[in-house]
Length: 153
Image 1 (cartoon, rainbow, N blue to C red):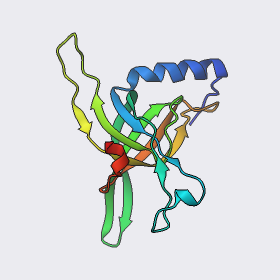
Image 2 (image 1 turned 135 degrees about the horizontal axis):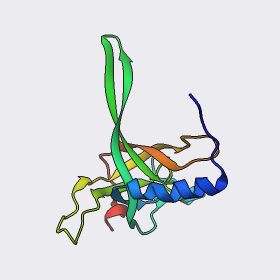
Image 3 (image 1 turned 60 degrees about the vertical axis):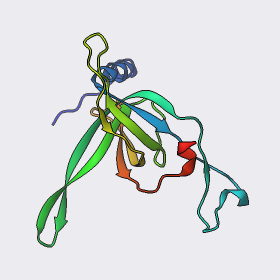
């Protein structure tokens, strides 16, 4: 398989062109750990502050199938995956919610909620389909059941 080197000019171009294919939007809620002894709860776990959420960020939400070897055979695990622009500062540990289609006001098409959330960003990596630099970022999401009360403030 041949890979082509992408120059910095084309890398910027490809990063901006990727935005056209990000057909969904999401809301991001970052977590900032509180430093020092005040940043630990009664169970010894770190505590966080939550800046205001950022709404309407472009993304593409998809399930990535990966094979998992089990004693009774190979199964497919579908991992919820969020693809975001290279310039997005989403980090593992952030919360993501309200993932929806963009909709179209001119055509009278309302956005459709794909994932209400919140869900936790588990892992992430820059994606470079060619040699020369990353074009977008891809993150695995995990569902959470316990929601910090700070998110509902």
